[in-house]
Length: 160
Image 1 (tube, one colour):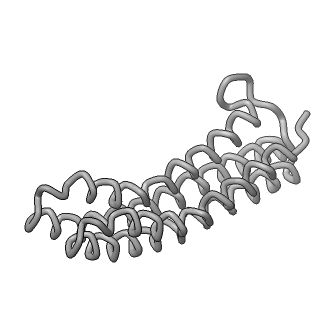
Image 2 (cartoon, one colour; image 1 turned 135 degrees about the horizontal axis):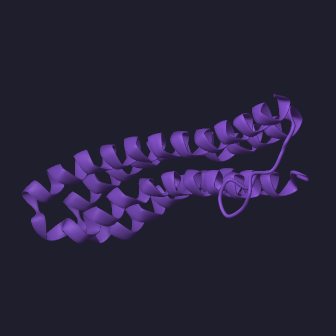
């Protein structure tokens, strides 16, 4: 029973990474999309620039998915036979999903807000696109750091 519970904890950690990152991206892309829709209703020729700023907050979901995928591969649920892991190891995998999940949740939402503000700037002057992208990309740094911590934790966990 303890072995199955360890696997369940590891799977829960993978799910948390993917779900929290996905929620952050959904909120962020939605916020930027609302602002972008207003801009293209007035200036449809800016669609390409608007799309870039709207898509930026979507990366947190990708990072969460990657963290979840690495956990599932490491415990053998993808690409191999599931391994037996105890509760302690299950908790380690659960904890390894936290950095990418929480960083993705928070940074996805805030990157959406920064992107939406940038879209307003681009509406006034399309030459501001590069500056707006840089401002939104600054928030991305913390999602990348969350992913890096999760990857280091996942690869540092010893399994049988």
